[in-house]
Image 1 (cartoon, rainbow, N blue to C red):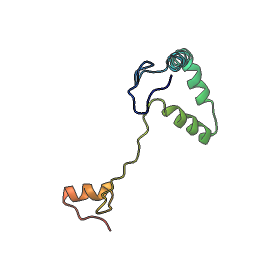
Image 2 (tube, helix red, strand yellow; image 1 turned 90 degrees about the horizontal axis):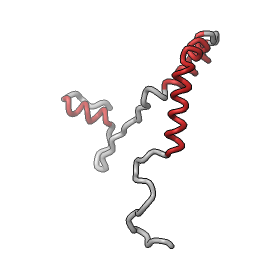
Image 3 (cartoon, rainbow, N blue to C red; image 1 turned 120 degrees about the horizontal axis):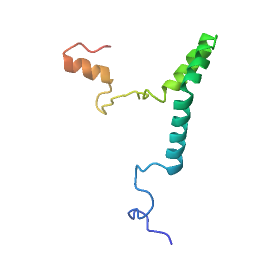
Image 4 (cartoon, helix red, strand yellow; image 1 turned 90 degrees about the vertical axis):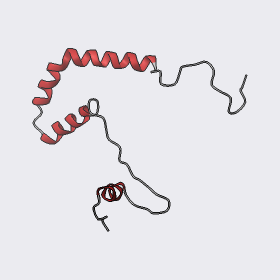
Length: 96
């Protein structure tokens, strides 16, 4: 039976409720990493190629350090950047 378009949601998961499989998998991965952390550190230390070592470290960092999104401010009447807005608020001359 289908609902009319625009009808409120009924049943199912509440918004923001994590998927059970995803939550279970994250717990298992966390437990594995905790158990094998010393082995992982040793393996990274043994890597001779600095570029490869840096890539691995950066890949691992995404799980502990949140990525920042860039922000762009747009005014329909006057196009300018967020930096221009901050400069204006601080009394500095805007860049051209």
